[in-house]
Amino acid sequence: MRNILFFKFCFFIFLISNAQSNILNASLPSEIGIQNYDQKQTDNDSFLEYDYIDERDILWSKIVYEKIDLNEKLNFPLLFPVNDETYEKNRKSLWRILKENILNQNITELYFDRNDNFKDKMSFNDVLEVVSFSEMINGIQTPAEELKSIDISAYRIKGMWYFDKRQGEMKYRLLGLMPVGKNLKDDDGKNDTDLFWIWYPSIREILHKEQVFNDKNNANRISFDQLLISRRFSSYIYKEDNVYGDRAIKDYKKPGLESILESERIKKEILDFEQDMWNR
Image 1: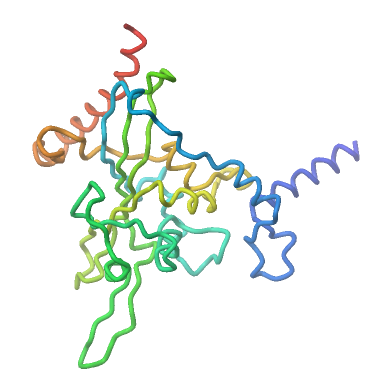
Image 2 (image 1 turned 60 degrees about the vertical axis):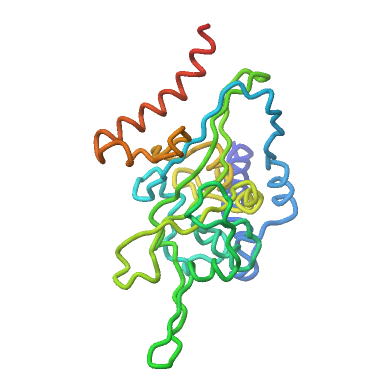
């Protein structure tokens, strides 16, 4: 009986040590969140590269644009913690991860929001004007204000649904990610704006190294990359690729019920295609 209890205790300690990376082995608070060699190797082994897809194997495809509203409870893991100063390493919001890596120039594939097809690339100075803002008042430069996690209200994503005839299944490939948040140049700060597109494949390895907090079982955590590519979030479609220059749903349907029904119609069309394939 004692051996069983001792085993359970050891197993519990193992789970905690993995959940709070290095918290039990840290000699200083600054060492909490630093992974050991085995943990780094495990993370590297679990990273799945996007498969190469031969265009001839794509039987059907559709590009859709979706919005992830951070006010929805299911999407809270992408939003919190909203106070970027509370935790140093072991807990970060998606925006904090993105901003830190943008400022240290690990993330460089950023594009103006005015083009959804990644044709209009931003320079580092262009990005700085979006994520931080400073102005001259009476000849004095004010301290720079930076966008914080609490300032981000949503994310837009661009992805492709496609039917892989070689593997006989419907798949999803995330292509782009766009933060939506506070416009620092807006005096009243009430109107959120689209910030910029990020080419998602270029940031997958960065997001794979950061884990999402799990409030049900902190010993069982996944990376931000795993959360996004496996679509563990709530979203709604606001646009699809179409013959009308990829017009948005709001351009041909009234806001409210009509737009919601159109979004659901597009979603159903995607789901029905795979079902129809097996019924032929």
